[in-house]
Every structure is written in C-alpha cells, then in structure tokens.
Amino acid sequence: MFYSPIVQRGAGPLTVMPRSFGVAVQRPQADRWIVDLGEDLFSRRWWRGLLTLFALTASAALLAPGLEPLPGGRPAPLEPAQLEQWEALAIAPLSGGSNTGLQMLETAAVEPLTSAPQRTSVSLFATLGAGEGIARMLLRSGASAAEAGQTATLMAGAGRRIAPGTSVAIVLGEQLGGGRAVREVSLRAGLDLRLTVRRDGAGLTLVRTAIPVDTAPLRIRGRVGDGLYWSLRSAGASPEVAAAYLQALATAVEVGSEVAADDRFELVLANRRAASGESVAGPLLYAGLERTAGAAVQLLRWPIGGRMAWVDAVNAGQPAQATAGLQWPVQGRITSGFGPRVHPILRFSRMHRGIDFGAGWGAPIVAAADGQVVRAGWAGGYGRQVRIAHGGGLLTSYSHMSRIIVDAGGAVRAGQLIGYVGSSGLSTGPHLHYETIRNGVAVDPLSVRFASVRPVDAGEVQAIKARLKALLGG
Image (cartoon, rainbow, N blue to C red; front, top):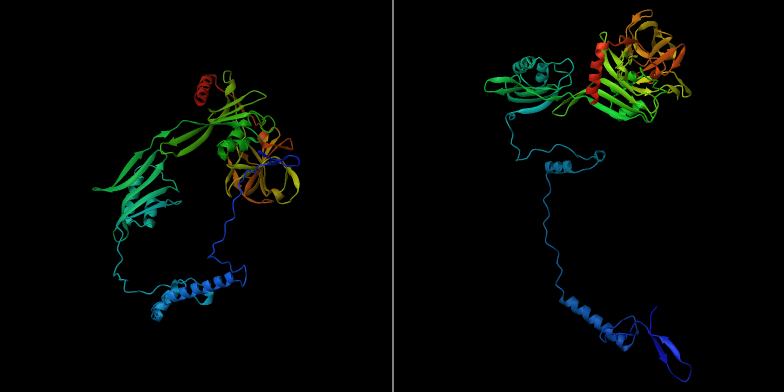
C-alpha cells in the first residue's frame, strides 16, 4: 500500500499516520417531507406522515375512473353437425370417447365433380424384373398394349440384352382406352450405351447414345499389416478380387508364414469406367508382393495351353514357369481363418481345421483342382461333404453343402461344379467350410501351393515382358 505520512506534533513523541486514499463525505440528510413510518413511532413527525398517506390514498380513489365490465357477446350454441366437426378437429384419446380423426362433413364450399380430370402425362421409374421383358414392364406401368409392344420391338432391334434390375425412366402421355401412350422410355443397355425410345412427328423412334468408356486397368497398392485379406479389402479390393489375389499368391509363397506385416501388395485388375461415372471391375491381371525378406513376387495372368495360368514374370527372361494354383471353391469372402477358435455352437475352444467362406444359400461350389472324388455324402457335424484327392497326398474338403451333384469315385476338373452352399450339420448359417489336407494333416488352405508347372514358350517371353510393362507403366 502506498501512502504519504502525516506528522502530528505535540507534547509527546511524534506520531506518523498514513494518509488515506479516500475523502470523507458527509452523510446526506433525509428530506423533511419524507417520513419513514418505521422510525420514531407515534411522534409528531410520525403522525404527520400517516395523515399524509391517508390523504394521498383518498385523492387517488376520488380521481380514479369508474370500473365497469367489458362488453362481450355470448356465442350462439352450435348445431349438432357443427359440434361433431369441432370434435373431429380436436386431439383427444379415443379411449375417452373422442371423435378425433373423423371425416369432415361437406360444406357449401364443396363442388361435386361429374368426372375426374385426366393427367396429361405421367413420369415414373420402373425396374426390370427377373424374366420380365420391356413390354410387360410397360404394361404394368400403365402403357397401352400396342405402345408397349412397339417400344419393346424397337429396343430389341438394338441387339443388346437388358439385364434384370435395370432402372427405366418412363414418360406416358394421354389415355388411349386400354392404357396410356408412350412418350419416352430411356434405359442403360450397358456401360457404353443408352437406348431411348422417343415420340416425334413420325411416331416412336429409337435413339442410340454412345457413352465413352475408359478401359485403363485399376491399380491397388497397400501394406499387409495385421492381415493380408482385410488389408486388401481396406485398400478397395472387392471380396472376389481379394480372394483371387490370395489364390494367385499362394502359387508362389506360403501365405500363412512367408508374408510379413511390412510387405507391400500390388494388384492390377481390368476396369471399365464410363464418362458418366459408373465403373465395372474385371478380372485380376497382375498380383505382386514386395517383400522385406525374400525375393519379390510378380505374377501375370497368361493363357497357356488353352487355360489361364499365373506366370512368374520375374523370371520371364528365362524359359518361364507357369503355375496353376488351386481355384477358389466359391465366390465369397473369408469369414473365419485357420487355427484355434471358440466353436459358435459347442461354445468351447477347438482347432478350426480350415477356412470358412461366407456365401448365400445355393451359391455354386467348384473343385479347386483336377482330382477324383473320394467322398460324397453325409459326414456328421460337417453335414453334406465332398472330398477330392489331387495326388501327391493332397486332398480338399468341402462341407455344410445344401446339395451334392457328384458321386464318389468320379473324376472332376478344376472349376467343375460339385454342389451348392448350405448349412447342413453343425452350422449357424449358410457358408462353405473348406479344408486342405496334406498327408493326413490339415494345413492352412492359404499356404498350399498346388503347382502344375508348364514351361512357357520362349517366343512368348517378350510378349510377357511387354504386357507387364504396359500394366505397371514401367
């Protein structure tokens, strides 16, 4: 605190006192005309204040205007019909006898019509059903039979098959008796073509609109991380493409033990992209793996002996070797891997001797490779099961099938249909349980290299190198 001292002199010793920051202010005196009736009770001043209060109150009462009731009219009672309408407008529980939601009665504002006005045109979208033609779709959409048949004939002249599920934009015109006239029908007949049947001065005509399509291959890269399959899916690969990549890679390395987390995968697949933005992915063309420990893998899909096989593009400078690996037995994603797990029904940990593929009921199951059927029938908890021997001590097993279409002892080719996905045996839902057994011991199907080695013609080596360069842009 800052202050300046004040020195007092006198007979005694000197006294030093701090100077205050504030300045003393006199307390204001109360107004003589204002009386606080809570002080000086019954004094002359108190009685004067009380009389003054009575005088002011009496003056206010004399000067105040007279208070009269406000004018207002009483509404006329409602007729029963009007009362019913008001009750219908109210919101109240029906359990208490309310009429909430009843239809309002007609009033003088309602004008009856002898006939409803017809719409001059109707615009709608329809979806082509399975097994349904253009004519039938137009008929159920409201078109006349003659117009629907003519439109279907024009569409058929384009020579394109319209796939079920195609969305069709339809504009119908005036009523013709049995239906409406067709003004315009437009649909996509493929990624590169739009077909439009439009009415002009000459009647219905077909207009073909070509759509530019880019066929540049699609390239996907990424790190293996905690799991190769799910890393592929996270990078944008579909379940079918991811399964095809694992199948190709299994022809070159042990996927279960020779692929590290820091390895990097690379895929190239055929892709068609329209100028309007739609795209359709094609088959896998290239499967590569850059490894942190070990030689890089570069596999190119190449036709050999009338069949597509994976070619080791790294060694294409020498007489290359083609490896035709095990085919994926079903189109679907892997839902459970090889190894110990808690059984979903038995509820205790046990060895899962194969891998599970999630697929819809009735999805086709094919043989993974050429071989002979050694079992085709019921196998206890495995349900309906097929086992195929491929030679060299290798067997493949397909379980929980809904239907088997091969017999024990018969020969099968790779990719041949052997049955359909189901949920027989100890199963919680439709899926395929797939096992590979080598010399009587179950092994991880992702680690099996079933090699069918064929030498590539030396004349194709340069073509393989050129194709690889074109795909990788090197």
